[in-house]
Structure formats: C-alpha cells, structure tokens
Image: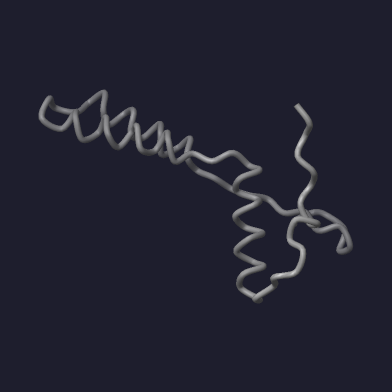
Length: 84
C-alpha cells in the first residue's frame, strides 16, 4: 500500500511465524529438562498453525465479505483452481 500510485493499491499480508518459530527453538535449546516437553509441543503447534499466503488472503477476503454481509457469488472473486 505504500509507495504505489493511488489507483494501484496492493495488499500485503504479514505473518511473523518465522520469528515465533525461531524464538521457540531458542527457548527449547536452552530449556531445562522439565520444560522441554511443553516447549516441544508449543513448537509443533506453531509449525502446524503456519499458513501460506493464499490461505491468509482467502481468510482475509472471507472476513471482509462477512463483515459487510456480502453473500453474492463469492466463488467468482477467487481465481480458478489449477487443473491437475
């Protein structure tokens, strides 16, 4: 959105999961034995919760449309799925 012409808005999705995963990894490396199982579980959950950019965009779009009660032909707004 910054540095683009007014008629050319671009959305940017920020996900800080890399920093969260790194912090959990550092905490696990330095953790006493009794804290390791909890940190290992937290690291596994954080890895599983990580989303790709397409999923982030889809969730954002769904949320915006729901916030204005838009129910018309949402499928037309999404690009077609690639054929396999």
